[in-house]
Amino acid sequence: MNCYFVISSLNQSEQKRKIKPDGLKIQNRVYQLIFKTDDTVQTILIRLIVGLIFLTEGIQKFLFPDLLGTGRFLSIGFSNPAFWAYFTGTFEIICGTFIIIGFITRPAAIPLIIIMITAFISTKVPILIDKGFWSWAHEYRTDFAMSLLFIYLLVFGAGRWSLDREIARTKKSSK
Image (cartoon, rainbow, N blue to C red; front, side, top):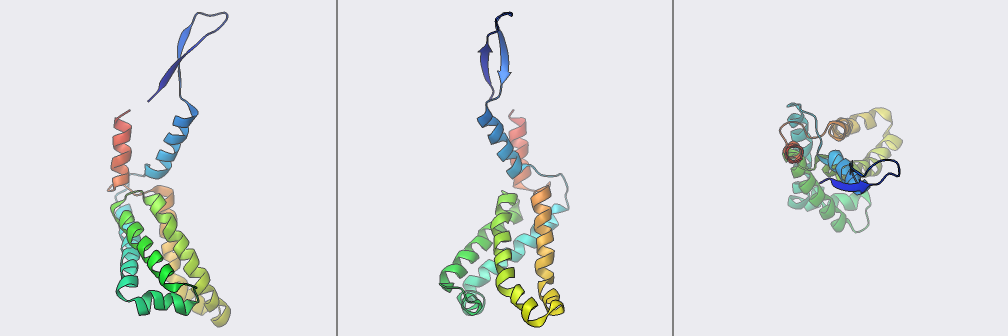
């Protein structure tokens, strides 16, 4: 919504001038950061890869708590491992689902990137220190690929077949 203010000039008659308040500029910029996306069809494949991996990993934290949930977090050395396992699993399920359907894809990617960074520091750095580069490279290969896919989603957005694109298109047509 645009606001119109009357601006007076000493040497000119009064005129109407279209002014966009700063709040609306910020709101539009945030909206663009969240929902604007490229128009590629192929991005659905990246969303499916990233989203399904995290969705299934999150579910497994609840299905197999001794192996992949609380037990895993305990073996890594987390204090209060049950909390962190279920907290992480919940974010993986919710954000993985959002990425699959292409809804708030960029914001949904951020918690998953934080989870990956935490996993890297807590599980992959010790491998690098204890077993060397080649063991680390082998263990990190999937995380590396996922990191690149996240960068793609952060830069280009959810793509053509996404709720983000529909929301952005609806907003654009309502102007």
